[in-house]
Length: 183
Image (tube, rainbow, N blue to C red; front, side, top):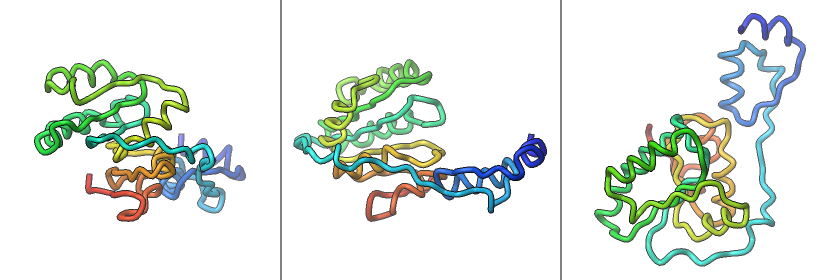
């Protein structure tokens, strides 16, 4: 496959959404670095200007597809530790995907139904409301192309926490717009 891409697309220009995506295109697909331009994703900040009051108790939000590689189960397990110190803390899980049933099952097994709420798909208006009222956005994914939801959270005044992994380490300025932790 790498040879076919090099042969048939050797003069084609490509766009990558982050430095780590560009690195993968070079390494995995054999695309020449000079044929790749980085164009970062962006958001329209004006849609994030209205403010919703923060929740009275600690609230964490995850927003994205519920896929195995997103590792939302880590976040669910982390909630057990969080509620030991903050009994009324809540986790909002927004999105749908193939891992949803297993995540709901894990939530029930860990007796966290009072602290974790699954929202499924939501409108843009509801997404902004949930982001704005949350204290922190966490994404435990092991890899992203970029991490546009990190920008959306930041635009709502919500810092982000993620593992120091491809894509997300490009979207978060550590100790400024959020925190990158060792995987």
